[in-house]
Image (tube, rainbow, N blue to C red; front, top):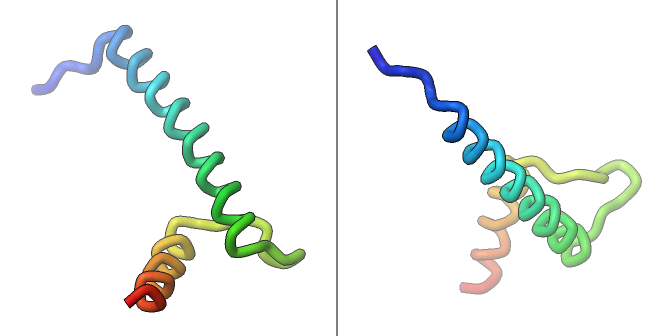
Length: 61
């Protein structure tokens, strides 16, 4: 059976996750500036990001 993570390991993961959240917020802000937002669409989710990336990749080709 696997032991639960140590307290220091959990703290490390929490710090990394916090860093990831800040990076995600920065990237979402950049995406919103590039592709715009309208009153009905004020946030992006992972699915929309993947779909948009796919369409943009097709535009580049």
